[in-house]
Length: 554
Image (cartoon, rainbow, N blue to C red; front, side, top):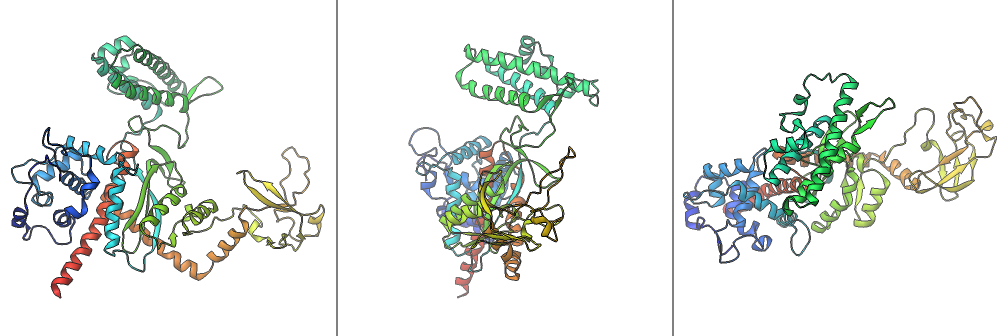
């Protein structure tokens, strides 16, 4: 407990509020009665109030409790949680707030969130991650996870908090945002900046409203607007950078302005293209490198499916589908592939639970590189559908019989070959390539369907020698074993438990993890870990209440 802190309710005062106020086994009950266990002093070392001078500071336990209560309900803002703590009797009891003391305000909560997002001194990881793992260990020590645990890893979109705009609005809003920041840094009005830049759009209410009367369906009109915006953006960025170099503003204003200038130039260089007839247009594409929001530049476009495009981040979760305990999670930009987080998540989960041997996953984790990385790095086997072989028509590579001991391949028509060599694939890896002697296609009954004997004719109308080759995957033998094992009833029965893992995603999204509540990847990660901690604390509260009831019954 900090030396300088507000006086909270004592034990006797809390006992007066205890009767029939908080349900045993609830999150509020656990936070009130087990605060020293949940929030040890070592976790919040460095928070305000540790010295004997200065203003009174809120105890870190109270702020952490309020932060968890905020994320126990979806869509609650900092201001909303502060108001709730001032009017809700149950919340005040859980926080041990005296009736004559106002709850922490929005600014205090924001400062505490920044404190929790900072690196823990001795570990170099965010403090909220250390707190989450502390809560998870408490749950594991109370045996929330049973012997029939089913470990599942999955991901889901997390929509960003910043506004996602089209290219025209990105340019227009970027210019106006830069003008507002530049005016604030120089302590002048926005009208002065508009006059200096000779840009009336700076004081306009919106970009599209400023270009009122433009026929946006006409490519030439759209091109004219884009050219004007690009010319203006380039000019004002040069002026702002020159003003910063000349020392016209204080140094603490440099970084936000230069970052906004850089993002504005990214839109100019990455989102626009000039056609052969000189028309400028926005590039219609979905890529992870494209800037989609000036207020949330770390957010990215990505696809959840062929038809669904998402904007923001991606939430990765690993936990027990049976008990619902979340063991590890992370938040990445949306363009990151699901499989990139498999190894770090399983590695962190193994540090908490050493007996993990298998993890169920969907087809996104079925590639051989991620399987090998996880197996070699953690000793855990990924149970996921192996990558299938795509073929448009006829026979596929899986129809060939390959003897890996004798290094011989037999085509479906019965023609064998022992001629092979190592070939470099498009991805840079080396794979075995079998070839058949010239003229062997005449002896094969399925030569017209076999990819080893068939190759499309040249578009110029010429002839082409039959290919007579079979290029194998670098891990072809292991892939064939996995595909054969995947067809067995035992594997399918084991994999059916993966659908229970949707419970983990549901527990996160039902408490607001679907939408980021603030800007930036760091805040999104803080929010996700707080939501996961709330989920684990609810399980812990139920377990402790069950034990307490059993003792009273005995």
